[in-house]
Length: 335
Image 1 (cartoon, rainbow, N blue to C red):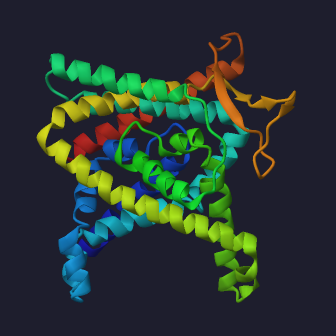
Image 2 (cartoon, rainbow, N blue to C red; image 1 turned 135 degrees about the vertical axis):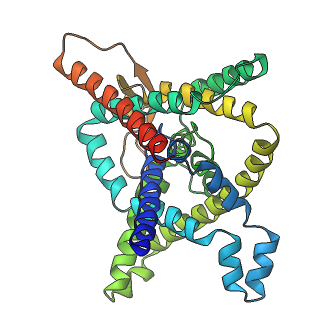
């Protein structure tokens, strides 16, 4: 019985990682929000903070068991394993639905973010002047980000490393979508679509014994890009977590108010009724290196309530809110 309960706890943790990883890949949705709602945000930050000089010293001295225990290894492996696995599974399913049922997917996410605002805010405590100002600042920044114009693609490795640091922010900062920031930096398709697909292709070929792919200059280019991006992400996770751990410990309510503001501001990014505006130069669509149209911004509009699809979208918004409320109810019942 005890073994079964332990297995279910580990499986549940892995599934949380899946959800966080899938959310990180979707522009406008923050994996940090998922970790906040699912109740493992503080443990995530705490675990990343444990990757420090002491942990490095334990590793160098060959004390692997002590290192594993010190950095909360089981938790990190399950969460990060689920998150990485989702890039080759759940996130591919999401990509399909975003291409074919974009309105309904955005509606579902919009509803979940509304539910998340309630979930995080209901136990906040006192809304004094400082906390209200912090909320407004967070919402203003989040909303401002949603209206920025994306840049062009840049595969310079130093820039890719910086993209890794900033892109992973969505995992540690609830309400801030790392994938949307990558769109603004011009490297979303390069890093989270092309490089990931090429990595999967290379690994699959190597596994079956086809090593010729390693002599392909284009494949090597993508492997370098994904390696540098991963290094930047790892550096960003650890460094940002140390900063967040410090400020959360000293200004918990203020930081939480800013986070609620961020999440509220991000509603502008995931507003379901929007149309992509593509960059046009010399009366032609500008294309990236892969032939994809470059998005300049989005035209957001009020839906037509006479259309059936609008009401289906509203249904998915309500479904998204209900999903968070069910998670909240289940969490309180467990306590």
